[in-house]
Length: 328
Image 1 (spheres, rainbow, N blue to C red):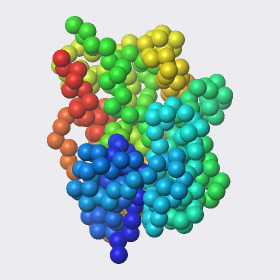
Image 2: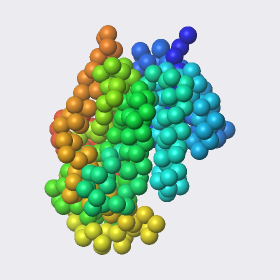
Image 3: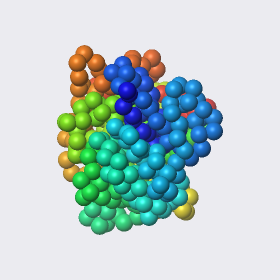
Image 4: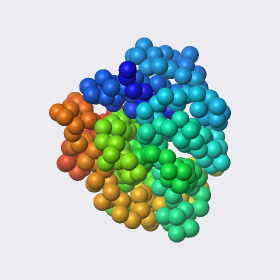
């Protein structure tokens, strides 16, 4: 009988990426049956997964009983929450703890928790308006305290968010952040890359249990990103650094301070904090792990333009699809 991997957020970027990687890997697809969790299986996105053989189960992360029922009999659970749906730290923490508690009660051998660094701690208390970081980190601490068998996937900066920082002009594009030109950001494509790391974790449970796995392809500076946009769009693109408060003024009031402090964290303390580069380098070895003769990350060749910085193949997922709309 096939083992079960239960994937929360099945119709989202991270959950969808995990489904694709499990189905695309010969060993995992033969060992695991995929159970996808969504609040409304009848929607088109859910039906597409059902057509691919995914068992869809309805659950509400705020409903403890539905979460418990959703993970019954699972060998692996991929847990992810969405802070931006409610803009509430308390709700996100409660939802994450519901997943953790259900895993503990059911005796799930491996919970893979999608989380973020604790920004308040990393900044020494300077940055206190980053609940979308701290809530996920608080759940991680809870999982560790409860001694739940788990690995912790720390998602990097989403490449898909770059477009929102590009101001298009008649003569040139301008990439605007409150970052220094040489500030390094750990970027990744959530929809394509999440599953590659999760697949590596699944195939190497003993190596990754209790560990922090950083999810990014490499480190990129704003000037490098601007150069890539220019290369892909064919239109001159420059990076412009602006003061923190000026950047905040560009943003919707409800999220302005939080997003401003997000980039302050990256600029002043590093996205992953002290030792982040070393841990990311180790995490990237996920794609080098083998069990038998199977590549656990099963990465097919890409046939689209990629970022040229750096030249290492691990950076290849900064792909041009994000920058196509800027050509206009």
